[in-house]
Length: 232
Image 1 (spheres, helix red, strand yellow):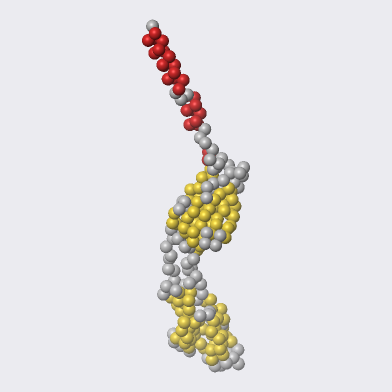
Image 2: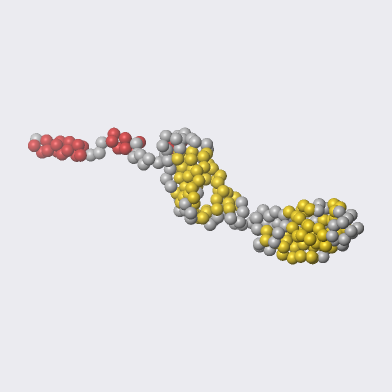
């Protein structure tokens, strides 16, 4: 009889020292609140980013993405972006969980997102490399003055040629000017650093032809159509 009571007592002590199943259930369904309501997705923390859209040799566009715990609505959001090379800080407002931002290439950034009800994210850091540079050739130059087919004053003894040219990569470095009295004009000046050339001698009652070769920093070139004007 004594042994039986000893066994019953041991069982009661074991159960009293065990973890209550109700406590386990409550703990699993109610995790510790870390104060983070907004979850950052992309760009990832401590990553090197080669994604995005090419903007120029020095810039790229990247889409930032995040979400919220339990799909709670914390809109509008404020994305704080810090350029860690100079500590410049810009706040971008978004009513969605994405934001497209133009970034400097070869720069390290940090970013964090906040919303209403004191909601916030962690702060993540990334290095923006940007997508591979696409070496696009310059666009053909167009004549600004004199426009093609124009007639300038018969008393003119010189002419100022002005043109315009663009490059998707924004890396034009110089121009070659072809000018003469033939429809295939010879090279007159090479490696001009401006989009104009002044005081070119002309004579009355003559027709002149000219064209521009635009050159960029990686060796691409584009040749304009042949422009023409007459004197008098």
